[in-house]
Length: 496
Image (cartoon, rainbow, N blue to C red; front, side):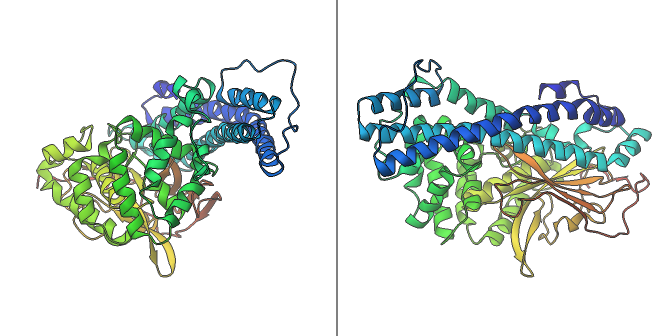
């Protein structure tokens, strides 16, 4: 991800660098990971089979000792050493525990490779989408307007920088050089009543159990299911780590109680999304407990309702806090600063909606990034049922009107800027949907607004999200398309 520091600013230079220099870096990394993923999944399957045999048959002779002991400090190796020791002494109880620990540790290793594959696939798909928006780069290159590479197609991945990749690395370090605390705790906690906790890193199991206690039995079953699921296991470990690190388990427990009260049944995706500490793209999540500012947490309790009504109330509440365009301002690093000053821009406003929505006990919040070359705009989106099908309702923190547009049709004819918006109203070149990743948002879908591929809708395969399992590219709008010209770019006076 450090390669982004070499990315040029000029639109066409950036385009060529992304397609010809950066793409091969990502592709080579994915190719290397493919063989590692296959080996890791094979190892995890063998460890799972071994644990099952010991648990079901009590046969402690199934693992043959090796001449050379495993010297690696890695947690899976430590589990194997302790399993071998238990088997050698015929200790069935200890053998079962350490076989399960080995299965959980190798599953965690394979899951990191799964995440890396999906992250790279999403990143490469964003460059495929960028290639469909080449006209936007040539147009911006030919104008005299000063643009920014962060407001061009596929820019969201640049805004997100490397937090998703860094979390893969962070958890890898935990597996290969576990803390003394983790090694001491491993196998020592009685998990007979909640065996699902075994799937979490040893030093996060108490947090897993603590948060679980805030849920009803029906939702606890979903919680336990997530702990052993591909992708969700590693994501949940990250969310536990963040909340333990910033002492926000009590606040998250309250949120889970709100989620429980508003959901008789729930999917894993809904429950996991309500944990997400980042409301938006890279600019949110500073500090990690930002969404738990007491003012946001209290306000969220007052707007709790069903999903759609909660989303509408969150949007209206965020907009009411702006108190006029004189308070429109960017560069605020935290939501607390936005609340203290009564100022925010579209990015922090979108973060605020997400924080209110999730703190009210609702899950599945998406971010839409609108790239206009000279300017960008961010809005939120939540799934609702319309005409018997699932649609994503657009939530704009700068617009006091009740939302009516849905993704991606809201942008078929360009962007209707919020009334009175005081900034540069650039042409909408692309609209991009970002979904929950491992530690930040990842590119999920893209819609080409202008250019030779206008009307095309691109979807990335994100196997952990319902409805997003398959990649696709279709033309969903037959036109007429908005022109790719600068004649309709306008600027309104500041603070009208």
